[in-house]
Length: 358
Image (cartoon, rainbow, N blue to C red; front, top):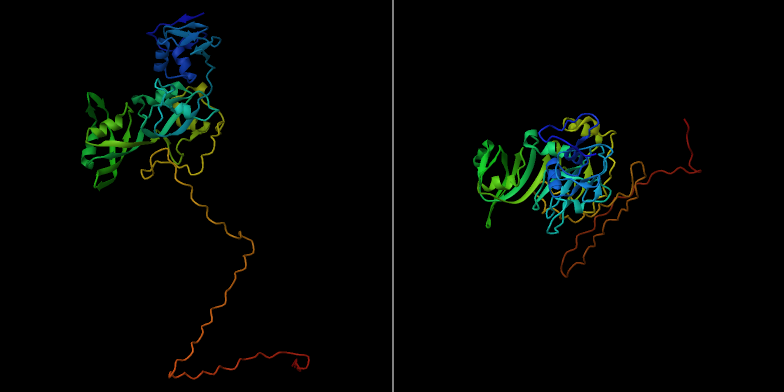
């Protein structure tokens, strides 16, 4: 039986009456609550075969939920992944124009994942993915104060004093952006203009926030790399690679954002990502080439011909070259030869040599 819930009340329902459909789908990793409501408005969610028209519905454990005709499995413990997003990928599950997405590029064997925040098609770096929509919603909200750190390469001239003014927040095109910390890392003037690398720290994550705020001080961002999201860093993760965060780390770092019944157990992650191709590298220090590229693999160093404890190989000693004396020219005096000292011979003991034992 479908139970209608008062939309003005919170998500806490009496025991046995289940939970709101938006919360159930968010916990199952389908989408955030806000996105689930959009799915319901589009008629893509059904409960026990009946298409829902309102999110004000409770779901019980024995009910069958489907999204786009596919059955939604019961929520599993929270899982979290670090992904090094390259450029030219959209952070969405489906694109009307058929462009490639992050989720198209993921390797097989993963659960249904959603992103925590987004990176636009021209941005790269750390993207957190999870199967827990409630966790994603909690970490995305500005009220959580989760810090994001970016490195931006921009064209234009700016002083540190100009960037320090952003610490009070700024309004761009009628949108108010909160405090932003920006520090110049490297600036270079060239014949084609000035380029500058800047480290930017924000705690809101509004749509294209870094690009728009830096543009307000005369900088055009050409490359944007997310270095960290909260306590999770990009580190040396190669471009296009994904790595699961261990259950113990999740319990230690995110316990305040996850319901106790959803906390994972154990210490080791269950997903092992395929090895990165030879030559793949992490582009995150502002000095490498554009994301998605790979440096040629370095030639392997020759291995030593011996190991510790082994006998060292014999070294071939070449005899020194003999210096030849040239023939004297006509009329040239020849220096007299210097006689060599007689060789000293050591005494040899033979049977005929008397030996004294006194």
